[in-house]
Structures are given as C-alpha cells and as structure tokens.
Amino acid sequence: MLNPVSSLARLIKTVMSPDHFVPPGPNGLADAESIAVEKVSYSKFNYLSPGFVSRIKRAHFDVALDMATRFAPAGDALDVGCADGIFLPTLSRNFGNVAAVDIRADMVQIARNVVRAEGLTNVVVEQSSVNAPIGGSFPGRKFAVAFCLETLEHAGDPADIYPSKLRLVEDIAACVVSGGAIVISVPVMTGVPFLVTRAGLRAFNHPREPLSTRELAAAIVGNTDALERRWQWGHLGFNERKLLEQLRTRFEVIEHADIFFQHVWTLRVV
Image (cartoon, rainbow, N blue to C red; front, side, top):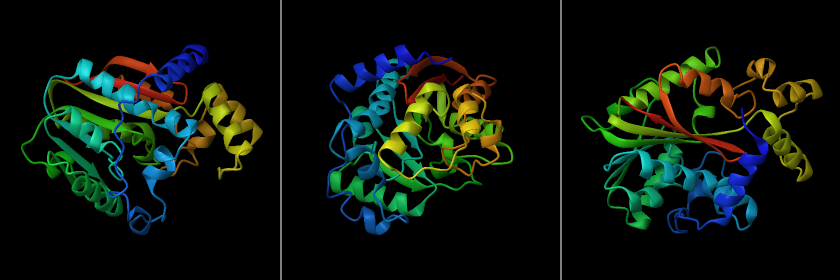
C-alpha cells in the first residue's frame, strides 16, 4: 500500500532534482491545437506550461528513464501510447533507436511533426490498432525496453477492465527481448493522493466528473467497485492497486516507485 509520506518525499526529491526530460520544441507542436481532435495540445496542457504543477506532472518521465537505464539492457526503446510525442526527444537522446505507437491518428500526426522538427533521425512513429498486435507495426523487431506511460488507465474493455489491460501488457512484452523490461506509469486514483487531486481540481475550478461523498470515501480506502461501472477509458473508475495485482499474476515487478500522484513500475520480461 502507498505510504503518503514517503511517496510525497520522493515526489519532492524528483521535482527538485535536475530535470532530464527533454521537451519537444515549439516548431514540432506548432500545429498541435489544429490537428488534435480536442483542439488542445496534450503536451502543452499537461507538461509544458510554466510553473510547479507541470513539473510535478512530468516527474514520472525522469523516474521512468532512470528505471530503464538501470534495469534494461542496452538497445532500442518502444514507446506505447506515445500521444503527441512528448517523450520522444528524451528517448531519442538515450537510446539507439526508438519506435513509437499510438492508436489515435491525430496524435500520430503531431508526433511525426515533432520527429521532423526536432530532427530525431533515430525515431519512427506508427499508428497501431486496438485489434492488432503492437508488434505488427514493427515486424521482426525486438526492443530492450518498452515504455507505457500514462496509457493503461485509458486502455482496455469496460466489461473486463483489468484482465484486458493485462492482455495489452502481454502484447507489449511480446515486443521486448528476454531479459528486457517494461516501464509503466499510471495515476494514483485511490487513497490520500486521489483526495488531494480532487481537492485541487475543485479549488482551481477544473473540470471533473461528479463524485458522491460515498464514492469518494470508498476510493480513498481503495474500493472503486462502484466507480468501475462508470469507467469509460478515463481516469475515474481506474484503480492502480487492482492493476498491479493483475500484473503480478504474469510478471515480476522488479521496482515500484511511488511519487504520490503516480506509480511507476518496472516489469521484467522473460
């Protein structure tokens, strides 16, 4: 179970440490708002705004990169759910070759713009399909490490939430060499961090799904059974504890980092 004090301490330490995250430049994201279906740049909205909040949001990038460089063998990297290419400049600097996939055509188009604008000659971006193996986008290739950051909470079948997420991770594992690693990050949607998140959204009048006092109280103690019936590929109704339990039925979790609002896990591929 997450220890709020130690996980908050780790978040503060990460935020105060040098930021090894390399953001996409403005040229690559210049047309992001016009291309994205929501008419909002995913990268700019979540990670590239000035201030402390954006630095907190992108803390998982540094933690994930640190895990990968310590636990994965040397080689190429795969970014599953790359969105608009937010992590690609960082990966390009740290791995020999990088492949990236996303199921959304608009995100793939923006990510390719980032690759071109940044001159990331060792990066290729492809569109994947929900019903096709990820490896089909890169036939015959195997990767030393796969990243799946802030993606699993949005993936899966609402009628079969956690087993379907596990199947996706198994599909990712099929693209990784034996002895390689999968690095996963997900938001914390239970416990004290979830309460703090909801309070922050309310304080700053940010859009948020309606939540009863009973549902909030249940989520704080880790019970999201009622909320899971409302899960539709968003954050609300996702339970990181249940996902971790499901992952452990198939994978060895060799490192587990709690950074208060996010979990980062490294799985060994055998």
